[in-house]
Length: 248
Figure (cartoon, rainbow, N blue to C red):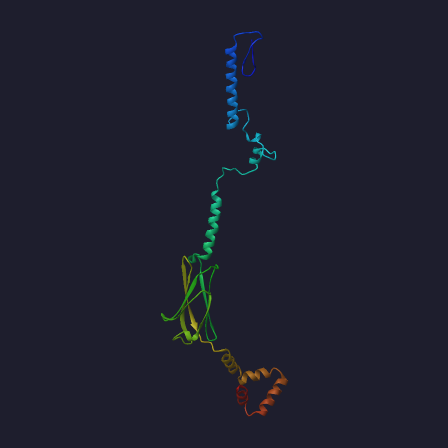
């Protein structure tokens, strides 16, 4: 009597009798194994060595799945908290520019008397964005003028400074506002209503055209001094000549 190698099926000897039951048992073994193999193929649940490893599974172009996975990022990764922090810092920096904390900067005011009024320039030691500025001018504690602006340079006409005359000391207050805070600064300034350009030039001419200044100027040159003598000779007085020059 002999049996098969793999499934130990009974192999009857030629001329042997009485083996019908054993042969039927062989068929049962074969049937059971065939069904098991079919289920394994259908369900892909085989347990052969390395059968389901990624390195043994091929794609349509012949590459194995493991090599492809090794070249890709880990599919189970999580986002780094540092990336989120970086984005939040960018947003925070943008908000700081649009709505800065003005309490951390210093405010400076410059006031200059100009023809016909007062020029006010204000700035901070670190350039910052502000939503609006309020300028207030007072004399002796009483309000004289006020303006709201988004510029850092303002001209106040003298006509808007009610009750302010030459040599008056006025207080100039600037308040800057941003979305989160404000800052305030006040200076004192002596105001002079500077004459208009033409009037200013005429006043300077009148102050400079003195007899002593003219003689001193011409005395530096002999020819110029002779020219002055000719002018004096042809005019009654130097004052009369000047009046003629100043006449409209």
